Length: 231
Ligand SMILES: Nc1ncnc2c1ncn2[C@@H]1O[C@H](COP(=O)(O)OP(=O)(O)OP(=O)(O)O)[C@@H](O)[C@H]1O
Image (cartoon, rainbow, N blue to C red; front, top):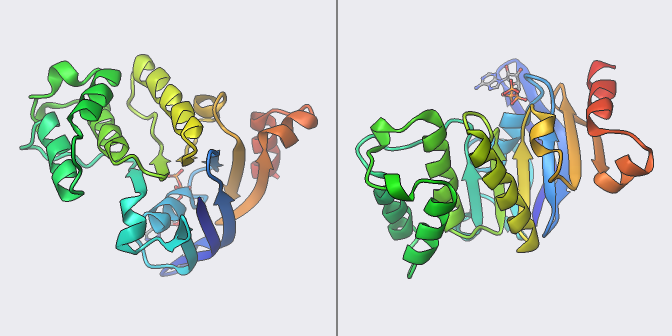
């Protein structure tokens, strides 16, 4: 479970995130939506422990900056960080070594096959397309079998097959009782998968609704998004 309580992040003159609180339960897929500059990436980076902030963030009840929390936490950044001089499979080995994973080979093969990277596993990072780098980043995160996983704009650069695989992966993670948080601009890209929508504007969460609540009012997420962000 992911819990964010009273998160505030101020950059010099800009309050990028202004006292927001939310949680993502086990087995829940939450989407963080909002127009450009709403504060989504700042929220995701704070949860990933990459920024200093005010407030409390816990991952399975552990402070997000502890080693114990990091062991059960996965993060797929908006811009995939791939090493130019490592092959795809060397990235996998690097992660497995850093996290002292044992018997990871079968899982690694399964992930690389799912994302069409198995036959490219000896290609160097420098030679990969943006989408391939994104897929390497996704495979490295999933290899750790995280209990809480964040995806920042995960669909950007992916081809239609990879988008389909990623959506199936989200649903698999949900079935495995993981907490998934996806930040995106593209409402269509998450339409079939989300359980809870969090809409940000000017650093605040202006709407938090479950799929059931939205369906009960005969509304669509897109309609609600424009209602609250253009108000
Ligand atoms: N490093 C920084 N220094 C100063 N201001 C920043 C910094 N990073 C973000 N901001 C500001 O904080 C606010 C929120 O930015 P953030 O990147 O979190 O929004 P976002 O919702 O992810 O936007 P986008 O959809 O465009 O990626 C914006 O006003 C942005 O200009």
